[in-house]
Image (tube, rainbow, N blue to C red; front, side):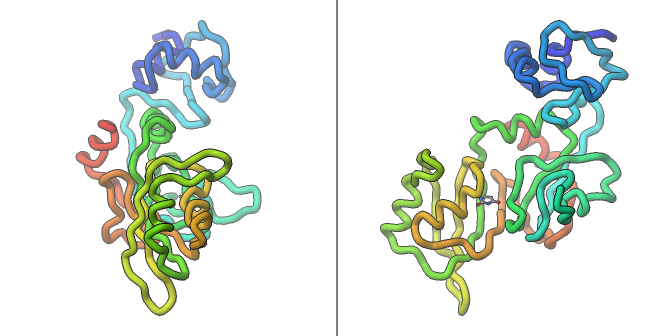
Length: 237
Ligand code: URA
């Protein structure tokens, strides 16, 4: 059936029809690989492939949702111009093309969601979504109460103050002090920059949770499919 592009997108719950029009005009949508940045295009919802930021928008089809425990030393993109290992290498046997939801730095480990549900990816990575993300950071020594207060009340990084955050000290071993950090923005290298700003550069970093979804016992480099309840939770956010 031929259907207007913005109607197709709205029905796939990308956003309201009005908002989908804006997204089309901003040049982020392609039909069969060709960018469409004018309104009025009609597509065949059975045979045409529509992508948003390069990710397919599917309607009704079966979607896959997985949680990967990303190791350090993997890049969160589909391909890397320096030929470094990418997270795609770790999910090859999923059997469907899936994409990371947001990103973790090359040298950050931990929870990375991956899916072929373009609408959910779009919604979860939208800045207004503010989902809590919990990180475990290894630093050289424990921050003081006043450093913690500065961290939690917001620090100017890249010219803009961070939103309220939480920082707790988990433990100190012979080598590192481990901090539990909760932020709900997703700015570039945010945890590293915030820790650096209070004088405690991060030596190692791992994301332990996204919202209520936790890595639990998932081993480094392994992935698992989300449960129906976990998918429902993500869609409710
Ligand atoms: N903050 C960082 O500094 N790095 C990440 O990968 C994620 C959050």
